[in-house]
Image 1 (cartoon, rainbow, N blue to C red):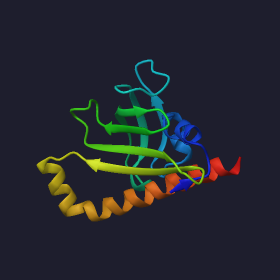
Image 2: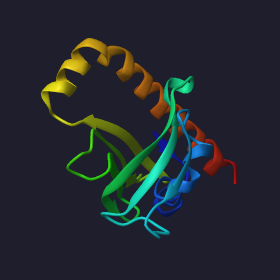
Image 3: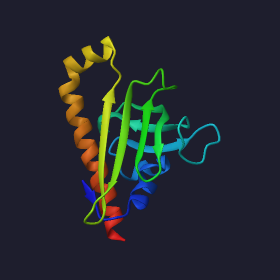
Image 4: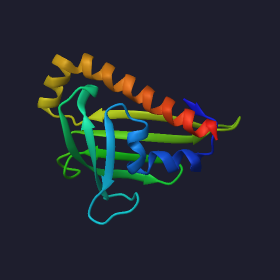
Length: 147
């Protein structure tokens, strides 16, 4: 998706986890942990999630795995990188005609349990994730382009 805003403006939204509640259909709030006030590799935060927009409602701890200003922001969901179950990533590229091309993606940890889960229920969760990513990016686009 292309957002008519600079990579710096888009980065300010995707890398400030405290703003995700304005955009995500599942994560309605988030907060930095361990005294952190901003993004860096290894920084932890937690998101308050309402799974499938219905429940259950729970807090999920995340660890930032990629953090290159104006380019990429990625994190794993889990208490540590080793315990992470899935990875979420935003990639930003300056568009030569103006604006920023943004791609949001997710990748599950490659374990037998995750392969079984994805084989049985992945079709539904994959659709939910794709719809949620589209909604998140559309909401970011609307906010950035309304200024």
